[in-house]
Length: 205
Length: 205
DNA sequence: AACTTGTGTTTCTTATAGGAAACTTTTCAC
DNA sequence: GTGAAAAGTTTCCTATAAGAAACACAAGTT
Image (cartoon, rainbow over all chains, first blue to last red):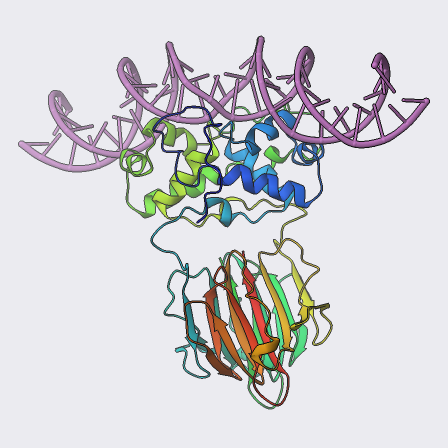
């Protein structure tokens, strides 16, 4: 972690839990996001529904904004929420990598899918990649919707399949196609080719 | 007694963000997480460094906690931060999906790679999937390290390549292999086969 | 130069978050 | 049942967040 400027500019506050190493993280991120959008304090404030003075103070870490305010800002500025919470801790992947060779992942089977979990040694990672072989061959074998909080990306490695999600029409997919979706919607696959369909999933809660 | 002060007193704007349907989402989640841990208000408060009265009010949505307080709670209760931010709204992936057919992604080229960005219509997504064709064929063509905050997953679709990361030995990879790594470490690829190497990357900031 | 416009910062005031303690409810003992 | 201890809620007070307006400081414009 880099600490470019920890200046006495910030008021002579004392102890306080908020003075964590990355206490000025939030303001920096928000300013960065705002500038990236090319917005002024006025514009960003309006987009988020807050005053420009408030925003100025937040960006300069002169105030401890409420959660609501931060939420509005993250929405307006479309910034990634998890990183707002990052606090250097033990469960970090800093400087690490984890390799899984073809076919060497951790097996995990269900009636409808045969999963191979990838890169499972790195337990602190936030995304969960796995390769699945779709066993279901027709809709009758299709069990109930899968549904879990988060978002998911799917890429078809080989074969042909139909991808179902609530609120949408069935989606025929073939090698090289991909889809990104809210995994809170019910979803599932059925193989429609002669051979097994293989897909790569990356899941994020 | 519920929602004592959620009256139309609030500002004129139609899309007042605080008046979302899930305004009491936060309190519910926190209480749920606390009970899951089997903690009392006292215990949870102590773990997070806040008073039990404050926590009580937060759980009952009688207050709008500061971002700091929420951050401490998420840490103490180990709850997933993104879901605290979920709000039904336009820039949310709730109930959405985005398909990209093979070869139909958005092209983006660099001297060393040819990228095809996937599922770019869904701007609010948190993971960024793309397929890359590695142009570099020997180490001399290899430019400087790529390095960006976050984590990354890579899956070899076809071809052979060597994957480099700081602090590690070069990693020969072939079809079906995958690697997950801290993308803050310098990293990069060189194609080592006769044909172009194709990989799928999923990046998360 | 003075005037304007646009951007960010600093007062100043009011509403309210957050903690201590008082109060209420639940749980469990006997 | 009664009493005691524990868990949760509400009250009260102080510290402070958030917005309005004043202020500062540019970069044009005439």
